[in-house]
Amino acid sequence: MSDAQTSEEMDTALRLLEAILFASNEPVSAQSLQNHLGESADLTAMIETLQAHYAQRGVNLVENDGYWSFRTAPELAPLMTITRQPRRKLPKAASEVLAIIAYHQPVTRGEIESIRGVETSKGTLDILLEIGWIRPGKRRDTPGRPLTWKTTPEFLSHFNLAALSELPGVEELKAAGLLDTRPILATMPAVEDEAAIARDDTDFANWVEEE
Picture 1 (spheres, one colour):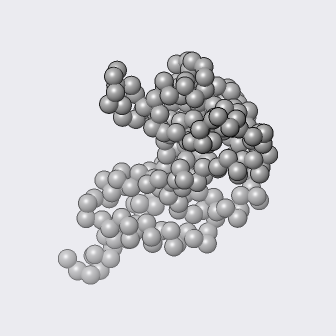
Picture 2 (cartoon, helix red, strand yellow; picture 1 turned 90 degrees about the vertical axis):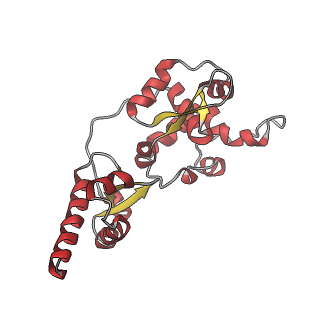
Picture 3 (spheres, rainbow, N blue to C red; picture 1 turned 135 degrees about the horizontal axis):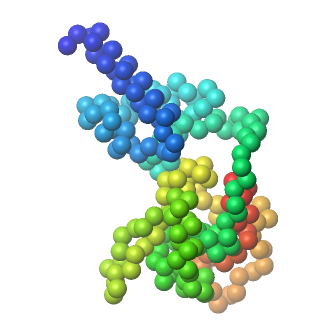
């Protein structure tokens, strides 16, 4: 195989990668991209090439927990106006359950109910499943083998988070005025501090809307 042919094949593979990412309606996993391009393709190098090419353009190639997609350059977001149909606000219960799953995952339905203090209806989980923000995880190795729940790459992508570690903390939400600043009961374990977001479903719903 000549050098010219090798260069031509690499260029075709790079264009194919670019086309796949542009054509996809949702972020694409690295494994899926590798499968499309073939095991011999150097996916890491190709992604770096595309990232460099689009670094100063209107869209950037970004990663969200191992999934890749093109997104509007952050500095251009304030200049854009998008007209779309208003989306129905998440029910309070769904906002609360989503917060608990996001901050405590993987978490079982029973654990969700323990944190909320009320029973969780199947319809609440169905809403989050339909949106694509949660997915089933592994079953717990405990009596009954309960199913756990986790957030999805679509959840991270929607809120423009590269990883779960970028979720706003309690102090950030307090600073933004989205969380009740009244002190938590002294008898409550410190580990539950992050769950304050889940307990105050209105604050979390406001954060969802702002994003």
